[in-house]
Length: 79
Image (tube, rainbow, N blue to C red):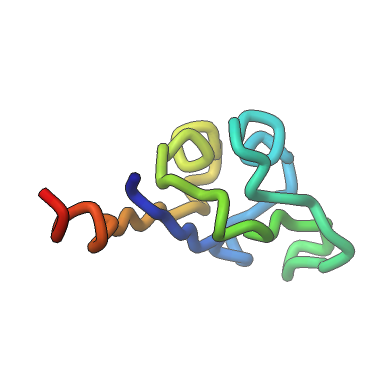
């Protein structure tokens, strides 16, 4: 299975929470961190659960999320 990681641009994030609400694996949370705009922003909190499905990036109205997908090297070697 592919693994993923996301990067949240704190300058663009307005803390709408769509990435939190729509992530099927619950990899993001709104935490007690204020962004430059003075709002609570999302944080990528569970990289071990992320499979880089990209839903968080699609749902972000501000294009603040970049999704990185990594191939599982153990599966690739076994094939």
